[in-house]
Length: 193
Image 1: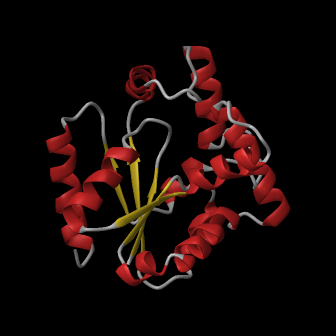
Image 2: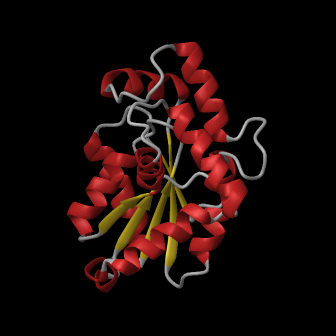
């Protein structure tokens, strides 16, 4: 079983992944780790979210819209222990081509997490990742691009991916316990967890 997680910046994808790993014994893989590795290969060690978005767009334009999902599965196959686990959660899906590629694998299931924009901005500021935007204007630009505003087919398309989800969960300032409870109930109804 492969679970995909999609959602806009700072909606709570990371804590959902951590919960699913802990509660259900899944191994995880982040599509953005592929982009981090690509930048490191180019000698780029300091970057912004825009740099990550640009690199993802370039790869999708060059190798197809599902390239990050395809590379993730190739890397997971190379790590036989993760593939044998058959319980994998993939975070950071941002293009419908990635969803389509993963849907070609039997047992794929997509969960969308969302939260209000103002809540997500506060989370961005509090988590302090070095590549995250540091002000409201930049956050709006990066968030709009991430969601797919004015993007080409090889660009960020989180909004479209979320529409492809099997279940959707709101995370508007809920406590972790409330979020996890909602997630557990929805997963129990939909999956053989």
